[in-house]
Structure formats: structure tokens, C-alpha cells
Image (cartoon, rainbow, N blue to C red):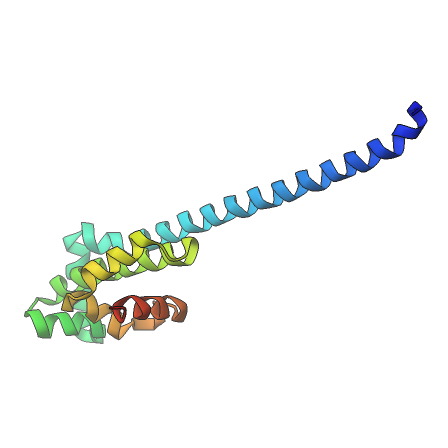
Length: 156
């Protein structure tokens, strides 16, 4: 074959190479975006919960404000069941909420996994963990995650 006859073949091969490169690039960008979303979710969880877990003063102030305005149902449940002070209940509820939010984030961004299932199964039987799950304030837990958790805890 002459060089002129190879030109169309080379163009087709080059076109396929461009398409394959674009597909790989799209997959890489999507993967990178999911990683960034997971990191932002983890940062949001930390921003919302860390101040209560690391600063007793903030937990005390929050408890005083909520004593006037009304406590969250989860904090009230901890106070009733475990005879905690308001600030102790707030700190513990934030810690357990943070745990649930982290699990949910792992599920939403990574899908089901044996490690996640094991983590939930190992700790779900504790009543203090169930309180946050059952009350699910402000629909913190998404329906698809709740369905996943239900499938784990009802599995024999």
C-alpha cells in the first residue's frame, strides 16, 4: 500500500485514540470529584460537631441556651436515659451524630462495603447509638442510607 492509502487508516486510529483519551479523562475527573465531595462532607461533619466535642465551654453555653429554648430530642433522650447533664448530653449526642454522619458519608460516596457493614453491625445494638438513629433529627440520615442500615440489622 502506498502512503496515501494509509492516511485514512491513520485518521481512524487517531480518532479512536482521542475518544479513548476523552473517556479516560472523564472517568478520572469524576473520580476526583467524588473524592473532593467526600472530603468536603467530612469537613462539614467536623465543622458542625468538633466545637462541641473539643470545647466544654461551648457545650455549656449551648446547653444553657437550649435550657431556655428547648433541647434537641436526642439530647433530651440522653438526659432521660443516662441522667446526663444538658452539656454532657449535647456532647454525647454530637459524638454519636458524627459517627452516623461519617458512616452515611462512607456509604453515599463509596457504596456498601464489608468494613462499613461490620462497623454498623458491631455497634448498632447499643441503645445510645440507636437513639440518634431512631430519632434521626432534621432528617440527618438519608432514606437510602436508612434502608441500607435496616438491611444490615435485620440480616441474620
